[in-house]
Length: 469
Image 1 (tube, rainbow, N blue to C red):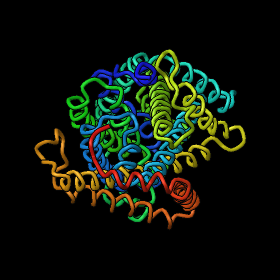
Image 2: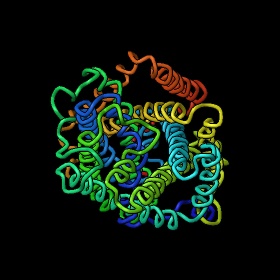
Image 3: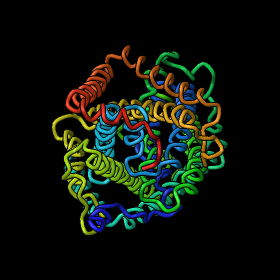
């Protein structure tokens, strides 16, 4: 029995560099290369800057809460396991399935975005055909060993980071006239004039916050990958500290450059403004190279989402919250059945064969953003409940290797901010449907588990320990 249990356990094969680049690369994709331009188009330069700064603050609050939990209990189930243990099993079940749907849907967003980018080279080929090709490619990559996946993601993320830095340098040089951009005179400061910062007013900022949350989605991969990483007590805090500020710097610098060079109305979804800038700068082959880099970045994020969804489904199967079949591992230590089921959700991207690609992109992005916002609420609430139970059980703060400062203010503020974003969505007709579907799905999951597993919850309530699994 013991050998069988070990055979069905994931191996800790991710090194510190893998964990760091996985979490950093998981955020640099569609959210930056395509969604940033869309956000500026909707909220203006000033609105986009405020939105991404505010989103960065929420991201920081979420990550420190997740850090305390992940260091104390480094398991693959991550926040689904934490919610089950420190809130109640029904909450863990609901959040687990909510995040699974959101993450798997995000993979569909990435495939759609990749298909849109391929239009630059193959305008006559439908977007859905490229979606199908990329789905097949990433399925094969995820069916390999975890170590192989982590190594591939490490280099993909490295390419993305270099590309963003290169873009920031070229963009800054263009703004100050070092590199001329066609017929546009430098310096490009007119678009950043106060009168044009908020063309649609201030309230639109709160409506577009879902775009921002979607952009920052993926940072929580640190928690999900903790169960397969070496020395999580050392590596997770380092990854959190390094990733957070670099993500925010990359996004804010890119927003400033895009806002300065392009008028708000020129930015949209059909082509990445990063590629357009390289076209205007006249750098030989740079547009095609940048388009290829962005394509790689987008597929990399999709790959990370598939990894997260698959591992989460595997963990839920071991907690009797998903069919046990999803808890089995292949000879390569990969949850193959969970992987196949995850890929089915990514087929949502094939809706581009029926609807316009940009319409599908916005729809899937909204669903994914709402699910991750609810998941962030779950992370903050889990940390709030964990700390309280930990102290009640006689635990000491100095025993926590990574702890949230200013408790309970940090988790409570995080919850308030995330709930506020969801409330503002109710006033946007285009996102109200997605919000109602998301909240309805969460409620159905909670009630389903609660009534079907009443006896299990009573047994769980009698065991109120908070020892690591």
